[in-house]
Length: 209
Picture 1 (cartoon, rainbow, N blue to C red):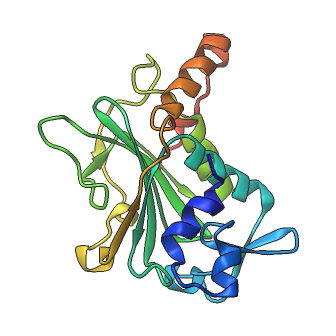
Picture 2 (spheres, rainbow, N blue to C red):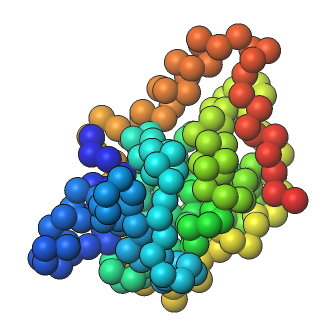
């Protein structure tokens, strides 16, 4: 399984140039010493290049390693948004990035008879909007839907999860590698089995104001 950089670079960079060749090892980012710069930052609402802290970069890699499907909304070299989704039985976990200083993570109902639009979910049962590190940690630690303490009460989705159809096109989708599609479920299930219930993560309590 490649890193998030490897996956995102396949989506965001298609040109055969020295920069693009280097970028294939860094999805959506190019190496600059020990740091990573977001190439498409200005298109996502941040002026200039953004330097991601190492912790945030690793958390993004963990999201991809969990088996999320990745979506690039807009041209690959100038995306308007990046979205990642993970499907449970009856729910979807979402990560939506439109700017890199404030992102949204969420869980939304996804009934089999009325599949949800990942770019326009009407309601959520949990959402966290804020700086990248805590938002990503909250998503990664979110209890599986079948856990008795998992969030289940729906409320209106935050506006930041809505991506107009015009801003989605062209749309590029990256599926997880074989064997990774169910990794998140297996990881969280194993973690819950090893963790006493009184110490279970309470990340689901973090809701948008």
